[in-house]
Image 1 (spheres, one colour):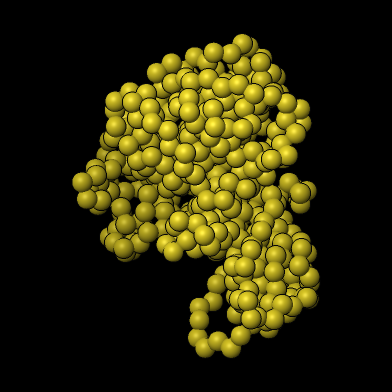
Image 2 (image 1 turned 180 degrees about the vertical axis):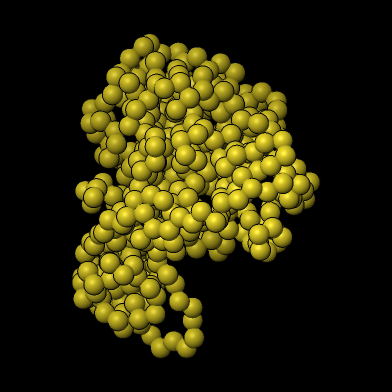
Amino acid sequence: MKDITEAFIGFELGDDSADGDTQTLERTSARAMCAMAFSLAWRSEHATHTDQLVARKLNLWRDILPFELEPDLMDKPVDHVAGHSYAPGELIVPYQSDLCFNLSQRAFHRKLRNNDHIEPRAGRFYPRAFIGGSKGIFPEEILPFRVCQASDDMIACDLNNPLADRPLEMQARILDIWAAGEERGGSCNDVAEMVTLNGPGMQARWRGQPTDFWQDLPFARVAGEPDAGFYAMPRPVSHVDRTASAQIAQLYHRLLPAGGRVLDLMASWQSHLPADHGLGEVIGLGMNAEELAANPLFASHQVHDLNLAPALPYADDEFDAVICSLSVEYLVKPFDVFAEVARMLRPGGRFIITFSNRWFPPKVIRAWERMHEFERPGLVLEYFLRDGLYDGLETWSIRGLPRPADDRYADRHADSDPVYAVWGTCR
């Protein structure tokens, strides 16, 4: 099992868990409420994956903890950690061959979404409603299924959880404990389902075969004019809330080399690096000179349009690491850019990509908008894998932390912006 310091980045709940007038408890019990962080670790053919979820209000009398973890999570204090390794099919429903079947291409409802024609592509995930009416599937079902293969007349479908045939490691950390109030009714939550359903596993290829992200004009954009005009005016806005930015900073702190020379690619006025980053020079490359000049971390900066000229103005082996924060979804020539980054990195240097589910709609690529958010790490993995220039590929995600109370979207979204990351090491 992974070392716990590798599995957990770090969490701050603020005042979101227990209400202000609720009694804080020292240890968990069947009469307690609890906030816990869960970390799910697994491997695919090409990468290591860690997906984290924070459950901020678990009722330990009603909600169902994984059977193997529950004994080690009861009568325990805050910061206690429990973990267990699961064989395929132990934590979740095992793989079932009868959930794999062939359908006629005519059974796929291409026009299910208004004004948007969707073609089934190999390796991609779609809501089950796209094949509603087949094999007992209700037309309203939103859980994803995978198209394994597609021919002119048939599609091969898989309704299994994409983690059903993989060994899994789950760890849980107790974040907060407080007394449960009186409740009537309420729903029962299954923690294993909360952590594993509708997301984790979708980053990986189907049986090692490259996912078909490349048809249907994947790099087209709504705003087709040159980027220079769009970015001519500075936009000093935060693209994620403070909680999400802090998670990105902690990830960078863990992965970036002390004293290293780092390029911040597609940069802006924020680099999402920790204040005590301990790096050497940080160089910025972005689209707006005013935003770059406002970034206090840059030793130097340069305006450069990667979509117009993917070749980067730096020497071979010049950087110890390259980061790209909240911008990879705008690249229209990603393979060229990833090859250039590999050229500039010293052997063993990391290229780290972080992103969320917010972007500038006119400039995001068509493929990004159309996919499930857990497919996006899979798309970025394909960028890394295409030319075989990177090793040590990993993905990481964090969901469920509370949004700051003073955030502009706090009245609409209780959860912080999710954070996803993909990184690899230059060969």
